[in-house]
Length: 304
Picture 1 (tube, one colour):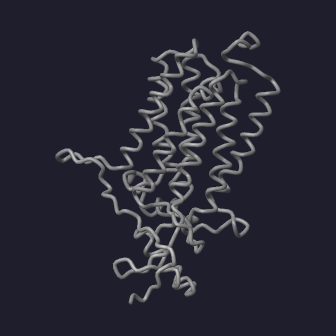
Picture 2: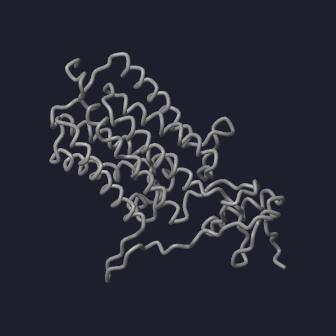
Picture 3: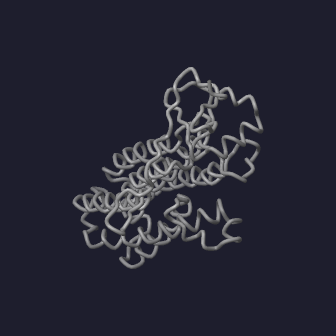
């Protein structure tokens, strides 16, 4: 019998997907790259659809907007990840900034980059920046869904160890070193370990999928429904910022804290710390929006 005990409920092993999604001769398309392509394609399609109900938007604007957004979300997301999570590694080897195919993108960095790009776009087309953000934001959450699916396929950003006996817990072979270190630190965890290729693996929450559903699917449905009718300027943006902040803060309780980062107050992860300001900003934007009630489209448009 293996030295490692099996849990009463079988724990799924993460499928070890090939990191390359498509082989075309010498060309290789990685899953992470494919998820980004899907995110941009869906964002373009959804934004194009939204122009049908908005006389102040036309398809050429959508092409420009998605192009600017695609450029800065990759750049901002990668720079943000390096600054927030791997700055020490970057100082030792600046080339890690370009290892995008290995994963490692920060939503908070990407969001700030998109904000700057949309400010430039708004200036170019002589629009209010929140007019632009309110139009674009309902198209964003599905991109987050694809990104989290990419995280899951790569077996990265796994969840915390759990002994709850949930049927959807999963062991990640990529977490072997982390699991071994945890067992050394806390030998009582060995009763939870399963044997995979003669290595102990611990049952973890598939938090990438939790985030895909909450930050991606649910937030998309909420923002798409909310923006389907005229809302005060800033309201759609405020709802998204608040919704993402709450979803991210909540799911971080199931996600493994970033290695080398001391939990704030002994329990708050860096992702939660970065999300708290988003909750506050989202609430303030909603209050401001409904206090001033400036509309960019709809029957009350003439109240601007």
